[in-house]
Image (cartoon, rainbow, N blue to C red; front, side, top):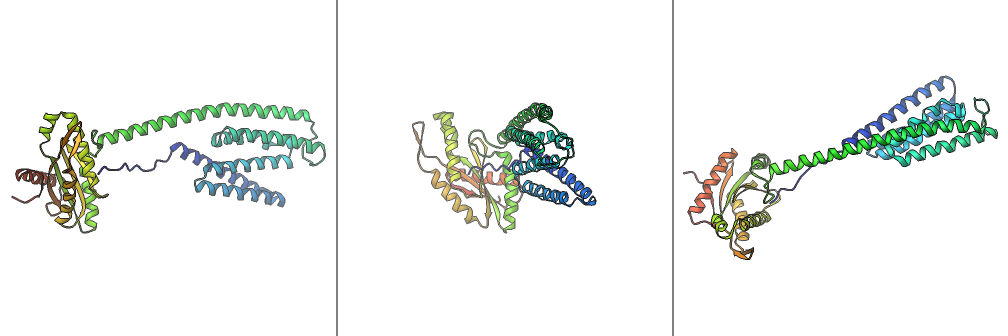
Length: 365
C-alpha cells in the first residue's frame, strides 16, 4: 500500500510577521489611548475619557479578532479606529492645524502594507473628504475649534501636503510589498524543492513506494504502537518468482510494468495501517502491525497470493505472476530490524526451495 503524503500544515511566515505587526500596532494604539484617558481623567474631561474608553473597546475587539485568526478584519477595524481618533482630535482641537493630522500618514502606511491599495485609497479619500467637511463646518459655525478661522485656501495647502506624503508612502510601500511577494515566491520554491528532495530520497522512483531507507523508520514506529496493544509486527519479505527470466525474455520495460503492477496489487490487499516498501530490484517488504498470532499474517498473505495469481496482460504479453514470501515476527523472532530482515529473507529462500509461489515463516535452524 502506498504511503500517503502526510505533510504538516505550513504556516506562511510572511503572514505570521504581518499578523505580529498588526498586533503590535493595536497594542501601541491601546497604550496611547490609555495614556490619553489618564491625562484627560485628571483634567476632568469626562466626555473625552468616555470617547477614549469606547475607542479602547474597539481596539480590544480588533485584538480578539486577530487572536482568532481574522487578521484582515482586525487590521480593517484598526484603520477605522485610527481614522476616528484622528478625526475626533481634529474636530475638537485645532482642525487642519491639529497635530493629529501629521500622524495620519502612519495610518495610510498601515493600511497600505496590512490591507493593500484599495484600503489605502479609501483611507486617503476619507480624510480628504473629512478635511472639506471640517472647513465647511467651521465656516458655518457648526464647530468651534481652538485654531484661528481658516479659509478654503488652507485646505489646498494641507491637502497638498497630505497627498504628497501619501504618494511617497504609496511608492515605498509598493516596493516593499513587491519585495515581500518575491521573497514569498522564493520561499515557496525552496519549500517545494526541499519536499521534492525528501520525497525522492525516501521513495522509489519507479513504483512511488517508500524505499528501504524508510523501512526501519516504519518498523520502529509500528512496533512501538503494537506493543501498546500487546501485539507485534510481521515482516514479510517478498520476491518475484522467475523475474530475471521475465526480464530477459520480454525486456526491462515489461519488467518495470510488472513491478508497478505487483506493487499496486499487493498494496490493494493491505490494511490502512500496513506499510509496503520496495527494497531493491524485485524485492518488496511488507510491515504488518497489530499481529497477535501467525494466523493474522496468513490471512493477509492468502489474499495477496490470490490477487497476484490472476493473469495480466502487459505489452501484449499475458503473464501469471507468482511471488515467494518469507515471514519473521517481532518480538517472537527478535526486535532488531536488520536481524528480522535477515530472518524473513531466509524464510523467503526456504519458500523458493520448497517450490516457489508460497510463503514460509522463519524457523530457527
